[in-house]
Image (cartoon, rainbow, N blue to C red):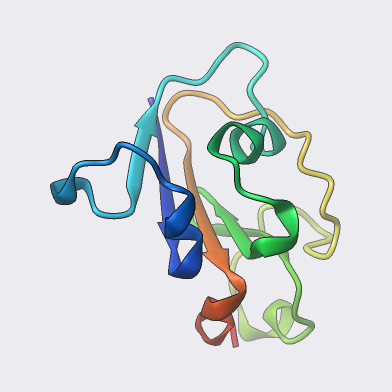
Length: 105
């Protein structure tokens, strides 16, 4: 299973979640699952996403100071929005909407 935590206005894209789950989705990843395919499956447009964390490390961000704040990074270039990397069982994604930019600053 993977855990997907969705924050801010991105929660409007969540469907069929119980109130006790809040903004967390648990799903079994397909063998070829990627971050991009998860966003597509959830119906979340990439342009609505401000930052993405993978296993508590910053994967992608739209703000320059994020690199210097001291977050551990999931890859060298956090401004690279190529999200074709694989996701496996046990991974955790954090998706923050544009309205949640203050969490990165």
